[in-house]
Amino acid sequence: MRNDIILVRPTLELKEKALAYRKEHFQQGEMIICGSELFDKTESYEEWLTLVTRNADPKTVSENWVVTDTFFAVRESDDRIIGMIDLRHTLNEFLKDLGNCGYSVRPSERRKGYATEMLCKLASKAREAGMKELRISVEKTNTASRKVIQKNGGVYERSFTFEGETADLYKIVL
Image (tube, rainbow, N blue to C red; front, side):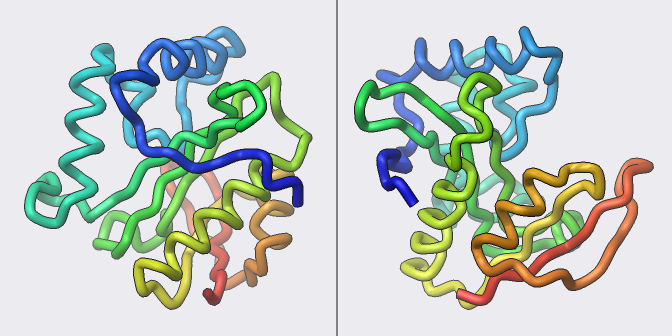
């Protein structure tokens, strides 16, 4: 693994780079950005930043949600946002199939090992937070993401259907 990215929490200083990241997904016709904690659905970066900051704190997490750490994966050599990944510390009824994290890599940076590196770094953060395992779901058709999960020790648990799509749930023991 290359180790040339770091996971950083969103800040106001990263606004323009974050908006460029989102724009690249949208320009590729990708209107859903996994692991973005609704960054793809929020017009205002500032409102989104407030939401993810609140959701990272057990005292201010949104009702009906769970404590979630959201990170940008930033390449150290040029400070470019390469991806996004989130860590849900617990699973509620809605998340029991979806899992503890989601992630995305900007379209121009795919197939370079970044998703594998991002998930590895997130697993370390989960261990530091006292978590014993991660559950991660992936659509049956997403072969690349399945490989990322397996490279990080993911073991198939079961399949399920969500919004008409068949997906698999994997477990990574930390």
